[in-house]
Image (tube, rainbow over all chains, first blue to last red; front, side, top):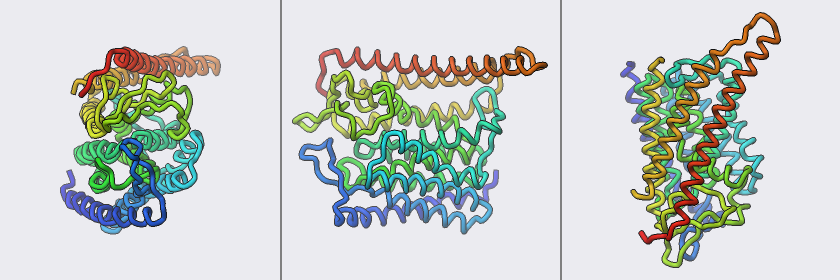
Length: 333
Length: 83
């Protein structure tokens, strides 16, 4: 184990946290002044909240990753590939926030975000599979990278529906990933996972219930791509898939119940409804998508804060299963 | 906690099914060989491997969908309670 690399992890964490935390209120003010706001539909009265504050995450991650690349030049290729993927996905999010993209265009465009990883060759086409070990996928692996990035970014995007849901759940996954990357000896990538954790903590402070900022698709697509990038660079593909199960479940339930790719905006029959007392309830509409929030509410109405707690618990369980999956990759049958 | 436990159980079921799926594909489907002497044999081998892998993934997705839908429609059908 190369202990000399350990100090870079808290350094990148602190730099990213400071940059994200300081820039979020500035971005929020800028958005509010320009009238770029979104209605918080899960609150009585539907207050207007500054949108696109994910720009602060992009800034924070850029400061952290560039600082890391300057400080540790032999990790620059990984840092640049990861940051490039994050920024392209964030750029697609900016376009989507200003001029909503179609349900097929968005996943297709987010798949392109993987280009820096492919062009810089920062992938290893031998993913570790549970009980099997390294699988030789030299031809198929580069074809799977765009799919992986598109699935991760859109799954995280579809989970960003309630105050604090996205930063809290991704924060849990980023904590687990930072630990596993250290255990796996992936020192070049571990500080990037720490950067993602720092950005999520900073966003959670402002986005938690009652939200003062919305990250928008700018933030959620970038964060999803960041997780996908960490999976590829850190050789933890299956581990990240398992840790993203609540997000994938949410997206899969929605897609399978509607029967096609869809955009939240185009759904006529809503999966949840706001009650007069401020709580949320699941609708009994046959054609409404069965989202994770609707599943949590199936038992009965609850508050937005409790639903997000439920999502966090499910993500925590998924992260524990992901750690078990990691140890299964070193066992052969 | 009451509203999370069934979903946690579904999550564990999906995870176990995913691991089984990977093992079936990696250890069994890709071990199948119908010969490799001729082009037809190689194509037949690859086709059978792909078909079994696809079937395993499809079975995983369908079982996941069925379990979730069954839970949701049974639960929402009950009289709702206040929390």
